Image (cartoon, rainbow over all chains, first blue to last red; front, top):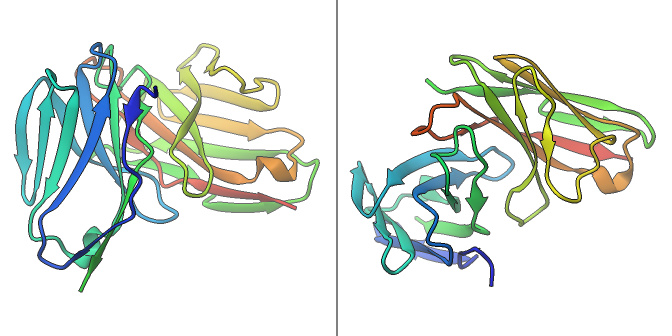
Length: 114
Length: 116
């Protein structure tokens, strides 16, 4: 079993839809959780960074962490065509990742259709 | 803030030549830098972690003599692919972190390498 599982999709939704992206993990040692967005042929861009269970909201994006279920989610409200990208979940055991390696999911390819 | 640049963005070279890729943190000091490789439709694969002024730590299966990493300053790390071959063609991405426990790492835009 891989440490981090993420459905690669592809996921296609109409503009304005609510998008739900998820990752599960097997190692309870993960403490720090991130979501990155990667456009084609570009480097990943940090979207959300959370520590511990709970919700964090930033504009149209909401990140949820449920440590008891080892499950993290990213919700995108009022999705736009510009949200079309690959979304990568990442997590770390020892720190936020600033000085320690991250473990990534495979990424979910999202297409938002106008 | 937290901007990381890479140069070049794209490089094409002949088999057997060496290629150097630069990674710079533009608005913060990066005590730790990471180098990743990404194949099409695949996730990021960590190659090595480098700390300023010390030798890089390579992940299992990554040849340190082929992928030379130098982290000479708090804002610059370089990856040199020595004697490149077509199978080294890939998307190379660096990331950088301040080293602070509660912070995460920020990625550069990536370098696409094509070895003919």
